[in-house]
Length: 399
Image 1 (cartoon, rainbow, N blue to C red):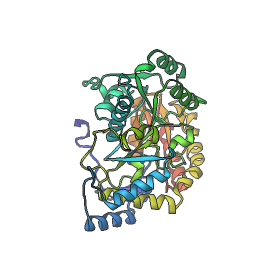
Image 2: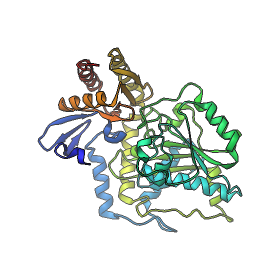
Image 3: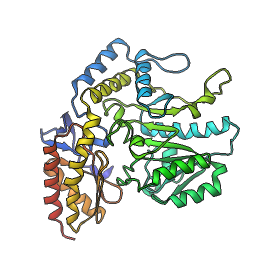
Image 4: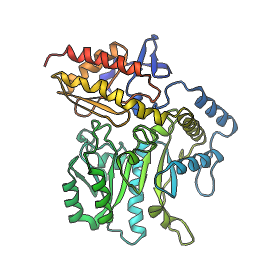
């Protein structure tokens, strides 16, 4: 935190794709904050829905037999959108909460069906799964464990695109493996798309070796890849989906874990077992109201379809930056997620700082990569303006 002293930028309002600091300076929000301001800033419809709900019933817990009408309405809405078929929805306060819930549920499921030895959770290099205890232990980003170590045992990791390494691990340890976690497109790890046939092989391996498949859709859920769920876009067939960010577009802390019937069934019905997990703000009434209003906007303005319209202009505009010798690779082409990998982190930081001065926020993520993941409402002209600033800025660097 010492690094921000004297350099802090404080935002005081936002509208559309823009945010404004204390001095009134305008910035284009190229990363949509942390991948999530999907419907844009300053949507009065969402603010009004939250205000109305807070005035009617601000909160009641969803423990035991209790819940609220708005919480149920959002659960039913999300279940209808789910690609899992019959779906149970467990609400959280965000993505890291959801990863912990999903990992615990995977282990609890195997215990419930008499396979309690299956406790190992597998992830990929460069994967980011939040920063709670499970997420920190599962991460494929070494810096996130620095000075902390692995907090949860029985976690394994395989190289990013190496399906043969995953198969070898499954053959060797399938009797102990509870679940394989993967993002449809790796986000914070540097925007890495799945290689051809990778996800189909993942589906096959998980089925063959009886391993649960968990899709971390904290970033990709609710439209970022041009379908409601990124799993559908890349051909992933999960048992559990973890979502957050896009479910409310950041207007309130909210996440949801979608659970298919295979995993849910032992915990429902006359002989049901208990999965002991809960959090105070799960399904919070005001957050649920924000989620419903956000889904209304996504549907009424056809913003998920708009993502498909924008993906080619965004990627094509930024892919041309590969002509610069300080750019190692531009990755993207699926939805509104592009990573511009620079030759090193220092070059990426230089570009980010110059762009900030020009009124464009471009975030640096893993591997010296510049994150571009704008709101779904972004006009094409703003994409071109961003591309022009990046082209000029990167062109001024000397390798």
